[in-house]
Image (cartoon, rainbow, N blue to C red):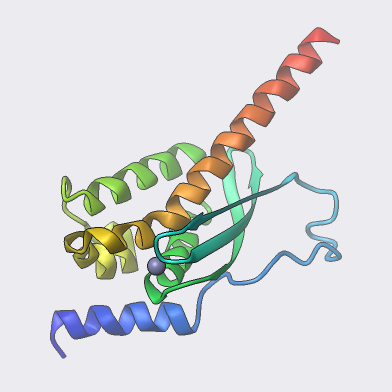
Length: 162
Ligand code: ZN
């Protein structure tokens, strides 16, 4: 199997068996009332992809994440790979991961081994129309984290005012 075939297999595997797929079980005692649930969604109208994310942040770390989505294999595979890469990381680490993934897709940075299965998606940078499919989940997470940070700021401010 050459590297291109291997990459195709990896993408297909994430598409057919997406990791961290679904939604949190709100009734589970682990999640109940413990942490704020964050969610974010977005779509790529060029291709008809849509992604919905849920994630939980505790002590500055993204401790768990789920996604649902519909669309092409690239958008689903990229979302699945993303959830594996960001789980357990700090918000700073995730910010830099998102920046690097974008640079890779813009052809400005080489993909490296620590990006795991995302290496299989690097070749899509040569198909400009499909780059948005790959980046969808990442931009949705980026926006979700922005919302989370803004919410924290507002909370701190209102506490301070009280
Ligand atoms: Zn797509």
